[in-house]
Length: 272
Length: 272
Image (cartoon, rainbow over all chains, first blue to last red; front, side):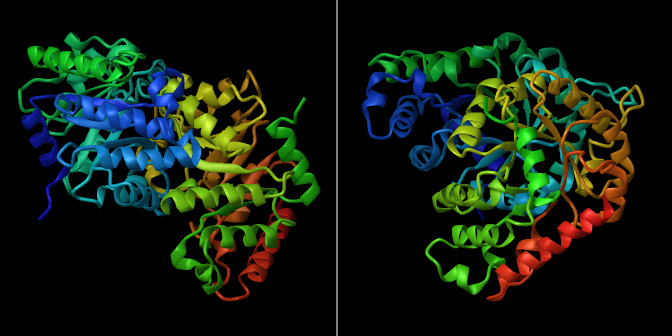
């Protein structure tokens, strides 16, 4: 019987003594000379970042859009990058998909089978039958957007429903329901919402939570750790991308990424 | 000054005397022998469907997931298929994306620039700053999910907000606001919701609406036409995929697709 995603995540976290998820958002305009000179800048850059930071990472989160925007070459690079990540470290592919069931099944096949990601980010707007094709992969993880880190989370996620609950709490409850069958649901909760985290954690009390928005987006790490990491073993991942992978644009980019990742890993551990 | 998406859509509709949008969801398990024998089944099948149906189509809607699930070959096929669509017929790429601004900008580049789609489907869950990178392409169209055709639309879209409005009406109002700057917003409203369509049309009174869910999903064409097409020139697209492209799995698949598309085009025109 293969590992469940949740087991794989817990083992990786224990082995690395880390809650850090490193986002891979390769952007040509920010990469060092050495990468730009190579035949395959995205793969060159990301595989080196992975090699340099793998001791500090609990998980990696490649961002589909950054590869897709480079066309076929980007798509090929994404395959190479995922293959370069050590097998025991979970890969969360960040594509925020969600469609009618027939179509979601194709995304599930693309990302879980073709690309062999361990987990995927999914948008909950279309409801249960749009997400069930992902949930059927019982050993994979599904991270649902719940409350995101951007300003636009005001537009719908923070609106109040008739029963007084904000939309994101309603979604958290759906995630809890959807998790019952295969225990493979997780949530994305932006770091810019420390106050709201407790309410979500009260509902999603055993589900892994991914927290983006530390670093470039200005989330407060201390407030996040106080509100969402309530026990050493609770599966909460703190995600950072730009502040690690672009720590230096010079020849020392690997060393700088390593230092930045290791420093954040320790900072999180001091606060958990 | 290049055409706006809305102008291009109106011209195509006038020229073809059609409101029909043909969905391209190429599925290996449903394709005719001839396609499966070719080196590039997806491109073979879709380019022939386009050639066979182009007189009846107001627009084409390639479904990103069906190409993506075939890996690199699928991605290459998608490029070929989009290039094979006559330039005057709008291409709406159905990928239902939406992410933080920095990432959405990469999707916009991938789909509007690399793949040269005329319009894109976008998920509104993350709000304004997640959608503005798409809206900045003033000559492209952005189709926001408003009320979808699947059962899961009950889970969030039909929930009532504190002010008594269902979520999908709240979203329709956001789409109206977002449209003010560049008049490039459109909405997706599933055919399985004829009662709700009037309410949405009252808000989105000049915005193009795409209606999927006729055919395989069981939407009632007559009820849809009665409720959403209230004038000959109102930009409403009725989308069908499986009922046209898989009208026959035999050697006559092109002819069968042509007959099915032409018949639906006329049926819609009789009802508008």
